[in-house]
Length: 219
Image 1 (cartoon, helix red, strand yellow):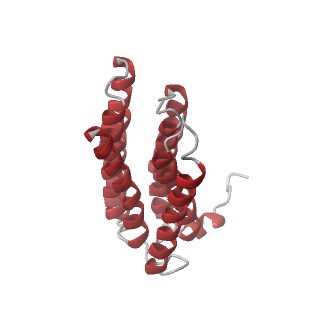
Image 2: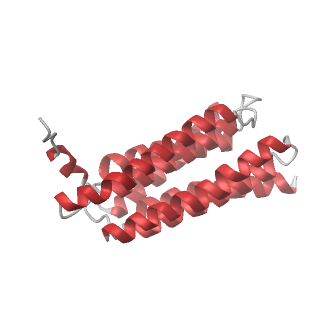
Image 3: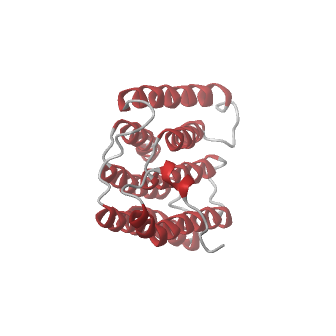
């Protein structure tokens, strides 16, 4: 029973990291949120799946603690040092309103999940509610943020939400699904690392709007 309480506490903390992500413009803080989310996902899964097979636990440790909490944030931090993009101050709406809207989304998803999902025996409503809010908030932040690095970070938080949502269904770990989504994240971060330096040479900043000016000059 104590483990369940701690597990739910970590899930709520995971949801609160999305509010912090919405309220700050410092990109380095966004990267630190990814580290915290990776650690929280590891703790959530470890408490909820400590009786899982060894293969599942090994995959879980590598995916959450090694990849999500260490490798991807480290890679993004290196990109940040090369590009000197420290803030994303030019969102479509002020960060205070981002926080308000994100709080409403988080509360709404939690209440809706508690009302509609709690009657389903095979689905954990707290997992599903926080996961759904994470995905929705991430998608919404992608639409209002202007920096490419910020958009990639929100894409990764959305993947974290999808990972948490996969745990909400009977608390199972569909390894093949998680491997596929994790591969997409690696591809996104790898492409960012390959092209961000070249984009920086052409434009003075990494605004998403600048991508519309890119053309194929080989024709």
